[in-house]
Amino acid sequence: MQKNHLSDEQKRYFFNDGFIVIKNIVPRSYTKAAKALIEGVLPRDKRVLLVPRELATHPDILRLFNQTRLKKILETELGPFPEVISSQVAVTPALDAMGGRPSPHVDGSWSGAIPSSAADIEPVTGRPLDPAPYFGENDERRGSNDGQLWQDPDRTISLGSYSALVGIALNDQSVPGRGQFAVLKGMHETVEAAFRFQRDTGGVIGPEGPGWPRIKATEEGQTYLNGLPESVRARMHEKRKHSDPVEGWEWPELTPVLLQEGDAVIALHSCPHTATPNRGPEPRMNIYFRIRRLREENPHEGSRRLGHGVSDHLDRGYYGQFLEYPSTYNPWMTSIEKLCNHWAEWQGMQDFVAENSVAP
Ligand SMILES: [Fe+2]
Picture 1 (cartoon, rainbow, N blue to C red):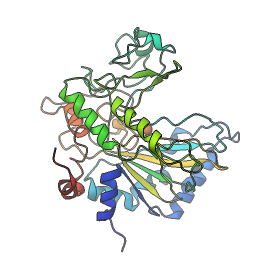
Picture 2: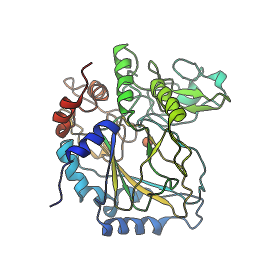
Picture 3: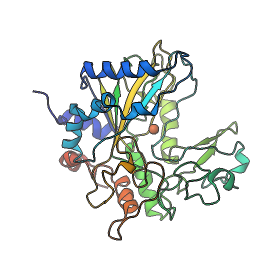
Picture 4: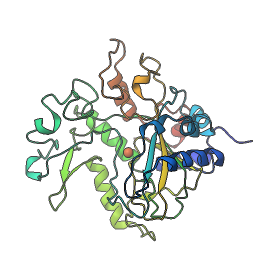
């Protein structure tokens, strides 16, 4: 009989690496139907990528999670969560038609236009010296910043979060260089430590907080949105220097998650990840679901406004609306607690975590 939980060995990998691959968990009939659906809407010009929004909520896409053992495994190991009603359909065209480089990050931060000159960035927080053209006059509000610079109106937390990212492969990605989802293996603990440091120093949690400038510049002066705390970036550079090369893979700091059709990856929110270039002959097709354990005291859980399954900023509405909360429940403090203790809400991992954590 197929199990609806992780084995001890799987838990050990998940605990140590921050992610786990589950082989052959989605029936081939489901992956084939989802793939056909996507192929049916992809533009003929293979260089452009436009997946219509309706696909994200299509029953043939949602059942990849909702009607497979993935859902049951998460219910066992994580706990209850609101119904998944949407997804991210992530297609990377073949033959590196889109170009671009990997950009590892922790999910949940703002992505928008930034100043092009390093001279226009405040170095400690990484804010533009003149933020209004980029963030709007009030950067806690959705406006010209087009998104969620902050999770709360008081601007104490700049990062959205969830419990688990679940990715399902619809095509073969078993050879490096096929646009794999890639991770900074094992660095989830460094990310959690960075959140604790921010909390303990009383700073902003996330970009703009201590040790995490929002915008940085390369040595050549190219500005970029910085998806990683400085401590993680330092470890990543060390790893790049000391890792053995992998054939067909130029980024030794990144671990390519090798998946075949019907395989899935489950990653903690704190496990930094990135898409990578697809040099293979066929489009790379993954479907991602973002799952956050039910927060019983939150009156908005399950509301369609939140976009359960796709949203990485569940303390605001999916389109950035600030929600009303009762005085007895502080959604942002709750999220900060989970960011600073990322195993706390995984009910099935508690014994394992207690046995394997190193005392501080
Ligand atoms: Fe991401």
